[in-house]
Length: 543
Image (cartoon, rainbow, N blue to C red):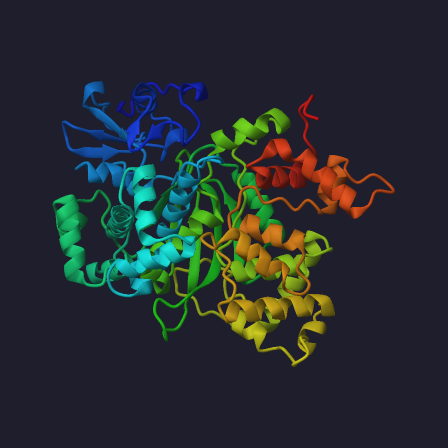
């Protein structure tokens, strides 16, 4: 790939097909386009494919800064697991584990949808063997049950669609997670093995040597970055990224003691406290703080966290990527929305680090302004949020955690109400909704994260008292990471789209708003955020 001193040439978007159409079964359908992308080091295509170099046995991201290999020495793969299955080792310089994730989506190929959903589930560290028992078999059993298919059918469809067996895909995800921890953190090798889902240090060492030719300790010594107490974990994204829009969104909703936003000359910084689920049954939750920083002129976010969260770093990294929408593909989104809104310039839909907290905020924000919802949330945190003791490296201003589901569920007076919440100004309808939500989360009947099943979760949410379609869609957008979530009943949205004429019924408004949004699929969630922030579509001729 070109040296850093080579002149940068921007690769026109038209040279590559939309994500999911570039590659098929591990080999590129248009290898010349892929070679052009790696030759120009265009970060917009980071994570869409990997390049295996036959002369070195190494595979790289398209943004790698080493000299471009000869065209005849390049093989192109859609997934890192495919490159590793073909015998290539990850590059130490560009580090494939940092690449934004990409899985093709098709509205017509049901097998591809099944494989993509399976891969998304396997990407979640909470589903790795450590969480489900020894060995990989329990993982596949739980995955097949989650998808409602047999193990055999799942394996056949996965390999046919993605060109790699699901167990090989899982192994690559775990090993790349371990590689990142070995490079960017001082965690002992034993803890890296546990955090990456390996049942024993012996199995971890054997898998690492088999795939990468070095044991984990040797790999750490060979890395460019030596792990130390304050090492930053690097998280890549595809440019552009609307940092100012994200900062504005978070600032408007920030709660004192829980989160801070700082725009400095060296880039945006966000920090907040966090509670993570226990790593094993009977253990205590992990609590601490995280801080993210966008350095200038880099397509990366630097993540720092308290030492108390280190044992769960793979899960934390996944949560942070979803919180900051780092896996979004601005090119694919603009391809659909730009004809209606103009370029969104890297607009991101902020997610959440805690699905329960996001749902509580959504309930308290029903039918009030953003400022009004924040006021109620602040009162709730001040009353019920436990104090957090931070270490010397913690960002200033962080001293509380958001109350958990068990705390809110315990407030129920037996009639679905909590008098102490009424004293905060929370009306009875919201009290019932909060307590029902807390009970569903506490008992495990409801999960709110990026791997939760969409239809089932929406049905469970709307069956709770006080939670309607608007709240469920908002939660789906930010907690479930559903890019096509669309709260068609939102009054502001209807006003700005002109679908709320005087005398119309709620159903008429709903149908008109749904019809107006049809051309924005499957990215209606991004369109909603754009309308809330900047007003209705502005490009002429988009009716």
